[in-house]
Structure formats: C-alpha cells, structure tokens
Image 1 (cartoon, chains in turn brown, cyan):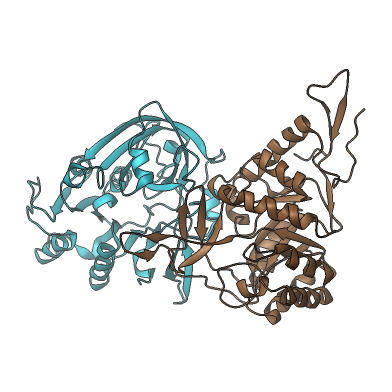
Image 2 (cartoon, one colour):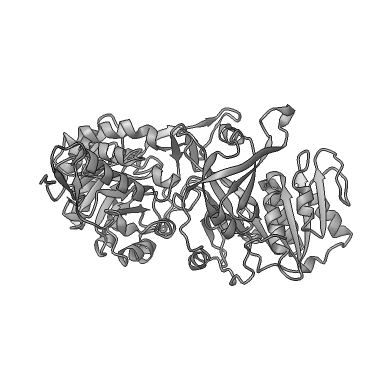
Length: 320
Length: 303
C-alpha cells in the first residue's frame, strides 16, 4: 500500500502486454492515493486504528458530528437480518468541538485524508458545524442529509430535492472545502435529488445511505430496535446501491462515492464500473476490522485481472 | 497448575484509552480462523429440545489464550454468509492454547454454533473488552454468577488464585441444573450453589432460591468481613440490579460484567452503549464492548 503504480502482466494477453495499474484519483480537487474510503459510522480512529493504519486508505470518513454532543437512541440499537443488519444508533457523537480537538487532530497528525461527515437537526445546525470545520485542515465535508434515524432534518430533508438544494447552497457559501452530499435511497427518484444537489453546487455525491428497515420479535410481538425502525445495510442491499450509482452517474457530471454492501474487491470493482469514482466500505468493516484494507488489496488484484474499470483515474492506464 | 498466561505485574489499570493500548499484545488482534477442539452439550434444553441447551465449545488459539483476562470476551463469527454479526461470549477458561466458551442455544445463530464439530474452523476476534480489574481487589473476593454468567467466573477464580492472600467465595445461581460448579469450587475457599429448582448441591446451603438469598444468609451469619470484600459479578440484569443494591447497602466495591446487543463488538459502531456516571456525576454512554463489559458497579445507571 502506498505504491502509486505498478506494472502488471495482463492475464491471457498475447505477447508482452503490460498494464500500469495506478489507483490514484482526483475527486473534487482532492487527490486520493486509491479509491477506497470508510463509510461514516463504521470507523473510529481509536478502535480501528489498532487494526490497520488508516493512512493506507484513499481517505477516511469519520462518524457524523453535530453542533453539540448527541446522546443517540436507546438500546437495543442493533439487529441482525439475513445478509445484513439494522442500526438505529442515532448519531451519538461528542459534538464538533470535541471532534476537532480529538479524532480530527489525531488523524491529521498522521497525514490521513479526512472526510468529516456532518449531521444536524436543522440547516442552522449543519451550518454551525461547517463553519467550524472550515477553519480546520479537514480535507472534505460529507453532508448527512439522509440518516433515517433522526426525527428532524434527517429523513425529511434528504427526501426533498428543494430542501437538499437549499442546504447545499447555504453550506457552499460557508466553505471552500469540497462538499459531498450523501444521498438516501428512501426516495421515489434518487436522480431528482442528485440533480438538485449538483445544480446547487455540490462537488460530489456519496450514495447510498441505509435503507429504512425493521425487525419484529414474534415471541414478544415488539420491534427488536428501541427506535422501532433503523437503517438496513450489508451485502443484501448491494443491488439497490449499484442501481442507484448507475442511474445517478448517468444523470450528473460530478464524481460519486459508491457504497452499499461492498464485501469484496470484486464488489468495489462493480461499483467503479457502474459509475463511481470511489467506493466506501461500511458494514464489512464492522464484521472484520481490516475489511477496507483487504478490499483495497482485492480491488488491486481485480484491476490487474480485468483492467481499468473506468476513466476516472488520474493516470490513464496504459498498455505498453 | 499449568501455565496460565496471567501477568501479575500489571500496572494499575485506569480506565483510559492509553492504558488499554499498553495492555495490547504485540501482534495485531485480527478476525482469524481457529480450529474447534470440542463442542459438547453440558446441560439439556427445555423439555429435552435444543432451545436453552447449554454448550461448552473449546478452540485453539495461542494468541487469545495468552492475552485473555477474566471478564473479557471473544467475537464468534458463524459460518455461512447470511448471519453476519459476531456472537460475543465471555471467556470461561484458558488452558495452554485452548480457549473455552460456554453458550446457550437461544436462536438460529447459536443453534448453528451448537452443531459445529471438532476440527471445523471458526472465525474469532479477541480478546475484547476490559476484564475484571484484579489489582483493585480486597482480601475477600465474592464471585457472583447467574446462569450463563457463571462460566466466565472460572477464569476469574483461576487468575485471582495466583494473587497473594485473596480468599475467594463463589455464589452461583441457576435456573435448573448447575454447571461449572465443581470446577469453580476448585479455586474457591467456599462455593455456594443455588437453584430455582431443587437439586442436590454440594454446598453449605442446599436450598431453592437465588444468589441474593445466599448473600443475605452470609451477611446474617456474619460469615464474611464485608468491609474487606469486593464483589465481581456476571449474570442477568435483574440479578445485577438486586446485587448492586446489596453492595451499596453494605458499602462493598463491585465490578459488574454487563451485556448489551452488539453490532461490531470491537468499538466502532457505537451500538452497545450503557449509561454510567463519571466521577462528577455526569451521565455518559459507554460502549459495553470496548469500555466494558466490566464496569464499576456503583457507576452503572440502571434503567
């Protein structure tokens, strides 16, 4: 990890064809050494940092921070489903001030490319966080308009194209840092929201956030989650995510970070073919702490085997 | 006693991030396949069926065996791609390279686990969490266990027996048939077993009831200097709530192992929180998998 390019003998090639595999991307002006990042809410610098060096990833997306500390939802916050899971964590976070002094400082001192995910109950709260982060060395901002667990400003904001556009405009006035809008799939037409965000000035989009889901204990006849519903993630949602990325890629011109059920390098490759410039690994990392690194390695192998997945890399992959 | 890798020269354990890092073993703990050595039923289920049956599973892992502290747990990942989340189980015993867990069949995941055979491999991540703080113990250590909370106290009893001048008393409660009673009694000065169903128990107090009944009898008979006692407990929440009141009434320091539905089981997802009071009385939400599962009894806010 850390090599920018390598020469690879193309499998099944005639003669001496060599392919230069160079995974660097330029996404909204920020150079990532490879197209893999973590999905917000599945990475914690202190915990995950014990398993691998986050500097090895193209970027790291941290858990949503709000203007003040949020307690999150009552437990149980987690339920297992077939090929996936439900979470209703409720964005428990220490607030932007503690984030800046703590996790952000820690990651930036290690030269990690950091995407700060921003949460809020109202446009004012989002703006408060963006203003503070603008004065730091964070690399990009991901705006969480789509978390399904928050009553105000979560599911309602992300499902309304006009609200998303207005928030994007407000945020763009407050910062020069690249702004990524994270889209929810819990809408009739995700392309409508995507286009609205692009028109309002979003520099990139990330999709998809979790699907709305629920699980009921048939013995007690009550929902497993204290919050009743939660966000559904994991390999079971991958087809929904791939379709969303494919359709949005054909609707907008800004780069996409694709996510939703990526478990292997081949899954990541699939998203890159569908139209994503980068990918994020979430649930896979919860069940295997080193998953993002493993998937990056497998993605490298896929590229060696199948060639370049798209035209979004900095260096056009050349055959010699 | 055979080599148990417990290092008595542990530094004083403050519950801070830094200290946890210092306690890490050199090699990176990873989710890795281990080989199952044995998997046997030690207590039949309800009506002889599978539900409620209790299994003892042992696997080979030098890394986990050498690092495990009593009170820590391991994440067990089920084979097959449909059930993704780890099942966390307390570490009951460690003997050379062999790690033991004890679990009950409560659903489809544990049912699948109960059917695994020796020589099959299983993915495991651990040891996770904070263990019991064995440097803060008074002379008398009362281990209180309820049901599936009993087996992890075996490792506690073993590791405490290495410390000088500790007297261990084990008070173990069951719904029905006891298990792990004999092996824990080997490391305890006194062992009391009670069951809600009447059974022949090799103990002073052969009676129906629960662990609190036993503790009250001990208290009444003045069989223990309570002012020189620490309680370590592992078991169902109602037991811990009642026990915490008894400890508070008698001014006894305690450490409780908590349970909560977990997501990742290693501290990333913030799914498994519990409420505790810090020194200033402020409420904090701590991760049971990472800041726990062992917490100071008096700091826990019960809901």
